[in-house]
Image (tube, one colour):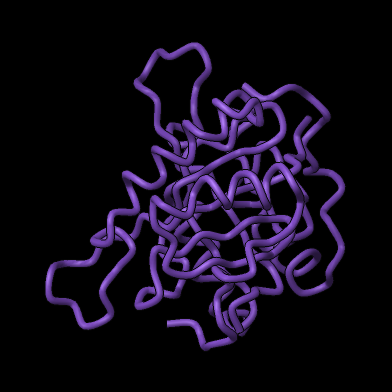
Length: 108
Length: 108
Protein backbone atom coordinates (compact mmCIF):
# COMPACT_ATOMS: atom_id res chain seq x y z
CA UNK A 1 0.00 0.00 0.00
CA UNK A 2 2.43 2.68 -1.11
CA UNK A 3 -0.41 5.14 -1.82
CA UNK A 4 -2.20 6.45 1.26
CA UNK A 5 -5.89 7.20 1.04
CA UNK A 6 -5.10 10.44 2.85
CA UNK A 7 -1.72 12.10 3.23
CA UNK A 8 -2.00 14.76 5.93
CA UNK A 9 0.69 17.42 6.06
CA UNK A 10 1.15 19.72 9.03
CA UNK A 11 3.47 22.73 8.77
CA UNK A 12 6.03 22.79 11.59
CA UNK A 13 8.08 25.70 10.29
CA UNK A 14 9.42 27.78 13.15
CA UNK A 15 10.52 31.38 12.64
CA UNK A 16 12.30 33.45 15.30
CA UNK A 17 10.04 35.38 17.69
CA UNK A 18 9.13 38.78 16.26
CA UNK A 19 9.33 37.73 12.62
CA UNK A 20 6.59 39.74 10.84
CA UNK A 21 5.28 36.69 8.98
CA UNK A 22 4.85 34.63 12.13
CA UNK A 23 4.99 30.87 11.69
CA UNK A 24 2.98 27.73 12.30
CA UNK A 25 5.58 26.54 14.79
CA UNK A 26 5.05 29.50 17.09
CA UNK A 27 1.29 28.85 16.91
CA UNK A 28 1.70 25.40 18.44
CA UNK A 29 1.85 23.22 15.35
CA UNK A 30 4.16 20.64 16.93
CA UNK A 31 1.63 19.74 19.64
CA UNK A 32 -1.13 19.83 17.03
CA UNK A 33 0.81 17.42 14.81
CA UNK A 34 1.42 15.03 17.73
CA UNK A 35 -2.26 15.07 18.67
CA UNK A 36 -3.49 14.57 15.10
CA UNK A 37 -1.12 11.67 14.56
CA UNK A 38 -2.37 10.02 17.75
CA UNK A 39 -6.01 10.63 16.81
CA UNK A 40 -5.57 9.04 13.39
CA UNK A 41 -4.10 5.97 15.04
CA UNK A 42 -6.83 5.84 17.72
CA UNK A 43 -9.52 6.15 15.04
CA UNK A 44 -8.13 3.08 13.27
CA UNK A 45 -7.12 5.10 10.21
CA UNK A 46 -3.42 4.27 10.50
CA UNK A 47 -3.56 1.66 7.74
CA UNK A 48 -4.70 4.15 5.12
CA UNK A 49 -3.60 7.60 6.28
CA UNK A 50 -0.12 9.05 6.79
CA UNK A 51 0.39 12.16 8.93
CA UNK A 52 3.64 14.04 8.32
CA UNK A 53 5.32 17.12 9.67
CA UNK A 54 6.69 19.38 6.93
CA UNK A 55 8.76 22.45 6.27
CA UNK A 56 7.01 25.72 5.37
CA UNK A 57 3.64 25.32 3.62
CA UNK A 58 3.74 28.99 2.54
CA UNK A 59 0.78 30.37 4.45
CA UNK A 60 2.65 31.58 7.52
CA UNK A 61 0.24 34.30 8.61
CA UNK A 62 -2.75 31.93 8.28
CA UNK A 63 -1.20 29.09 10.27
CA UNK A 64 -1.41 26.52 11.55
CA UNK A 65 -1.57 25.33 7.95
CA UNK A 66 -2.62 21.74 7.20
CA UNK A 67 -2.90 20.16 3.74
CA UNK A 68 -4.74 16.93 2.97
CA UNK A 69 -3.48 15.17 -0.13
CA UNK A 70 -4.25 13.76 -2.66
CA UNK A 71 -7.40 15.86 -2.28
CA UNK A 72 -5.26 19.03 -2.46
CA UNK A 73 -7.43 20.51 0.28
CA UNK A 74 -5.71 23.21 2.33
CA UNK A 75 -6.77 24.36 5.77
CA UNK A 76 -6.00 27.63 7.58
CA UNK A 77 -5.75 28.56 11.25
CA UNK A 78 -6.22 24.99 12.42
CA UNK A 79 -6.30 24.60 16.20
CA UNK A 80 -6.46 21.60 18.51
CA UNK A 81 -10.20 22.15 18.80
CA UNK A 82 -10.63 21.50 15.07
CA UNK A 83 -8.89 18.12 14.91
CA UNK A 84 -11.83 15.95 15.88
CA UNK A 85 -13.98 17.43 13.12
CA UNK A 86 -11.12 17.21 10.63
CA UNK A 87 -10.70 13.50 11.39
CA UNK A 88 -14.40 12.64 11.41
CA UNK A 89 -15.54 14.75 8.47
CA UNK A 90 -12.60 14.63 6.11
CA UNK A 91 -10.46 11.59 6.92
CA UNK A 92 -13.36 9.30 7.81
CA UNK A 93 -16.23 10.95 5.93
CA UNK A 94 -14.33 12.08 2.84
CA UNK A 95 -15.77 15.61 2.91
CA UNK A 96 -13.65 18.75 3.44
CA UNK A 97 -14.32 20.89 6.50
CA UNK A 98 -15.62 23.94 4.67
CA UNK A 99 -15.25 26.43 7.52
CA UNK A 100 -11.50 25.78 7.74
CA UNK A 101 -10.63 26.07 4.04
CA UNK A 102 -7.66 28.27 3.12
CA UNK A 103 -8.81 31.32 1.15
CA UNK A 104 -7.47 31.80 -2.38
CA UNK A 105 -4.51 33.97 -1.41
CA UNK A 106 -0.90 34.15 -2.69
CA UNK A 107 1.80 32.03 -1.12
CA UNK A 108 3.94 33.79 1.45
CA UNK B 1 -3.06 30.08 -5.23
CA UNK B 2 -3.39 27.93 -2.12
CA UNK B 3 -3.41 24.74 -4.19
CA UNK B 4 -0.09 23.82 -5.78
CA UNK B 5 -0.09 22.09 -9.13
CA UNK B 6 2.53 19.77 -7.66
CA UNK B 7 3.33 19.24 -4.00
CA UNK B 8 6.64 17.42 -3.78
CA UNK B 9 7.48 15.70 -0.49
CA UNK B 10 10.96 14.49 0.35
CA UNK B 11 11.51 12.25 3.39
CA UNK B 12 14.24 13.60 5.65
CA UNK B 13 13.77 11.13 8.48
CA UNK B 14 17.08 10.29 10.11
CA UNK B 15 17.57 7.12 12.15
CA UNK B 16 20.66 6.38 14.21
CA UNK B 17 23.51 4.61 12.37
CA UNK B 18 23.04 0.84 12.48
CA UNK B 19 19.24 0.91 12.64
CA UNK B 20 18.09 -2.13 10.64
CA UNK B 21 15.46 -0.15 8.72
CA UNK B 22 17.94 2.44 7.56
CA UNK B 23 16.53 5.88 6.76
CA UNK B 24 16.26 8.39 3.97
CA UNK B 25 18.34 10.84 5.97
CA UNK B 26 21.35 8.56 6.07
CA UNK B 27 21.02 8.12 2.29
CA UNK B 28 21.56 11.82 1.69
CA UNK B 29 17.99 13.08 1.48
CA UNK B 30 18.82 16.50 2.93
CA UNK B 31 21.19 17.35 0.06
CA UNK B 32 18.71 15.85 -2.40
CA UNK B 33 15.91 18.03 -0.98
CA UNK B 34 18.08 21.17 -1.22
CA UNK B 35 19.00 20.39 -4.83
CA UNK B 36 15.45 19.58 -5.89
CA UNK B 37 14.13 22.77 -4.32
CA UNK B 38 16.77 24.80 -6.18
CA UNK B 39 16.03 23.00 -9.47
CA UNK B 40 12.30 23.69 -9.22
CA UNK B 41 13.06 27.38 -8.71
CA UNK B 42 15.60 27.46 -11.56
CA UNK B 43 13.12 25.74 -13.89
CA UNK B 44 10.57 28.50 -13.23
CA UNK B 45 8.17 26.10 -11.51
CA UNK B 46 8.22 27.95 -8.20
CA UNK B 47 4.87 29.61 -8.80
CA UNK B 48 3.01 26.31 -9.09
CA UNK B 49 5.04 23.70 -7.19
CA UNK B 50 5.92 23.44 -3.50
CA UNK B 51 8.82 21.27 -2.36
CA UNK B 52 8.73 20.24 1.31
CA UNK B 53 10.86 18.19 3.64
CA UNK B 54 8.83 15.75 5.72
CA UNK B 55 9.02 13.28 8.56
CA UNK B 56 9.04 9.54 7.80
CA UNK B 57 7.25 8.55 4.57
CA UNK B 58 7.19 4.89 5.70
CA UNK B 59 9.42 3.32 3.08
CA UNK B 60 12.70 3.49 4.99
CA UNK B 61 14.49 0.61 3.28
CA UNK B 62 13.54 1.92 -0.17
CA UNK B 63 14.69 5.48 0.44
CA UNK B 64 15.23 8.14 -0.54
CA UNK B 65 11.44 8.27 -0.75
CA UNK B 66 9.75 11.12 -2.64
CA UNK B 67 6.00 11.60 -3.08
CA UNK B 68 4.40 13.89 -5.63
CA UNK B 69 0.92 15.05 -4.66
CA UNK B 70 -1.91 15.49 -5.58
CA UNK B 71 -0.95 12.79 -8.10
CA UNK B 72 -0.28 10.39 -5.20
CA UNK B 73 2.76 9.15 -7.11
CA UNK B 74 5.45 7.64 -4.89
CA UNK B 75 9.09 7.19 -5.85
CA UNK B 76 11.72 4.83 -4.40
CA UNK B 77 15.50 5.00 -4.16
CA UNK B 78 15.67 8.49 -5.62
CA UNK B 79 19.20 9.82 -6.07
CA UNK B 80 20.62 13.16 -7.16
CA UNK B 81 21.05 11.71 -10.65
CA UNK B 82 17.28 11.23 -10.96
CA UNK B 83 16.23 14.77 -10.16
CA UNK B 84 16.57 16.27 -13.62
CA UNK B 85 14.32 13.58 -15.11
CA UNK B 86 11.86 13.90 -12.25
CA UNK B 87 11.59 17.66 -12.85
CA UNK B 88 11.39 17.46 -16.65
CA UNK B 89 9.13 14.42 -16.99
CA UNK B 90 6.81 14.73 -14.01
CA UNK B 91 6.78 18.33 -12.80
CA UNK B 92 7.01 19.90 -16.25
CA UNK B 93 5.66 17.09 -18.45
CA UNK B 94 2.98 15.77 -16.12
CA UNK B 95 3.98 12.12 -16.60
CA UNK B 96 5.35 9.94 -13.78
CA UNK B 97 8.89 8.56 -14.08
CA UNK B 98 7.94 4.90 -14.40
CA UNK B 99 11.34 3.44 -13.61
CA UNK B 100 11.39 5.10 -10.18
CA UNK B 101 7.91 4.12 -9.00
CA UNK B 102 7.58 2.63 -5.52
CA UNK B 103 6.53 -1.02 -5.68
CA UNK B 104 3.25 -2.02 -4.02
CA UNK B 105 4.74 -3.00 -0.68
CA UNK B 106 3.56 -2.53 2.93
CA UNK B 107 4.50 0.58 4.87
CA UNK B 108 7.44 0.22 7.23
